[in-house]
Image (tube, rainbow, N blue to C red; front, side, top):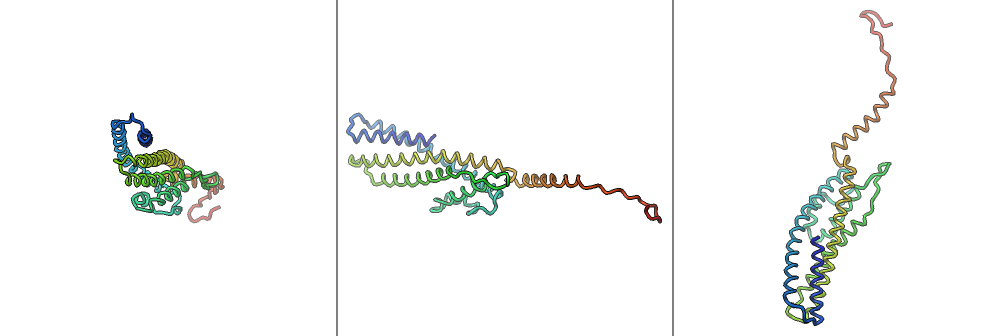
Length: 239
């Protein structure tokens, strides 16, 4: 929701700058003050919510990776600790979280009737990660463009408008990434819940023991009972 408001604010700024560069005389400083005030408020709220969401997401990420280790112990390219550390490590944050998520996704895939994993589509993962990385790159570009603009120079107004449009593109990418992340969290959680008896070691052991008993009991019931033998008195041989 906040990301959508950020897109609207960026578009509002672009419209005002467009009217100003087109020579419209009805654009006042009060309008720019209003959009600036809204932008600052949205930015403060966005930062607060982004930090809270990041903490919740990382905790969730660590847990699903822990569950995925139980499902497929040897099917992961990175250690469990990278679900936390990758986000704070330069350069590797561009692909380590992606690899970790893909491995968890594949390990949590549902099983067919023969016990083989049926790999679900990874399209939503591609959308989530590509838009997230794209938003980071576009945001850096917009920031760099604004750093070379003199806001007091009327000639640079068109450059300001261009950088604002780039920021709009980054906000749209963040919005798409946020929606895709919600889908990823819901689907991956659902896949692991569907296989929760394998994720929970105690439940898995109980299920295994139940399967063994189910196999053994019919065999025991089908085995012929041994005929009782007469016990002869002491000193005599049995008849």
